[in-house]
Amino acid sequence: MEMQRAIHIFASPDTIKVHLAGQPVWIEELDHANGMATVQVGSRPANTMTVSVDRLQEGE
Image 1 (cartoon, rainbow, N blue to C red):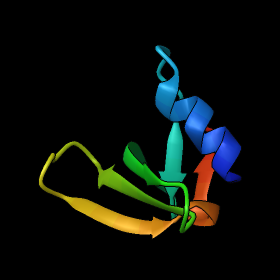
Image 2: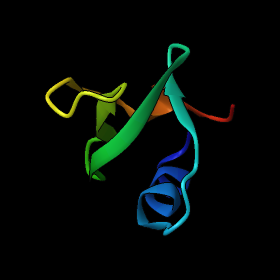
Image 3: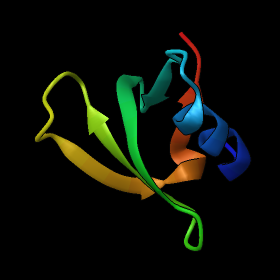
Image 4: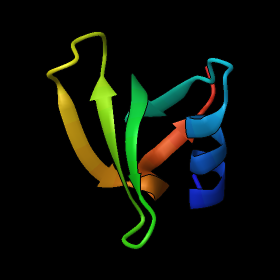
């Protein structure tokens, strides 16, 4: 995923599905300068990871 799309998804009032390695994630924070995203994996708020935005995929 490109950073511009991640920014749009993060700011959207709609729920847009995003996956990381096939697992659903929620974008929690974006680091524009470094192209990184902190995401919540699954439904546990404490289960977060910081990954490159290009590893995220939009879709089902």
